[in-house]
Length: 124
Image (cartoon, rainbow, N blue to C red; front, side, top):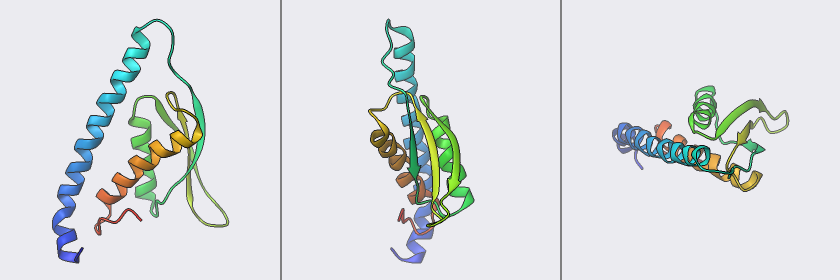
């Protein structure tokens, strides 16, 4: 992708991400609502350590905020690994099938977020 093309597509990528995330929040709200209004409980709570590809404070803050905004998930904290300098989130999820599934959910949000935020449009 050329620099001009990436600049021109950047606002559309941001808008597309916002629309996708709004849909995800609505779907998650219905899951939590269904679980609260029906007998029994379907939740399988757990905590996962989630390494990220975020490079800036803006990216890690946005990812942590988006995870927390999604019903059924909560960012508990962040840290930076001393050896690799990778940024790590600690995430609590109410409806995941273990830490790997929770990491995959956060990675899906992260991929789309980084593609939308970075001017080059590259999530790597």
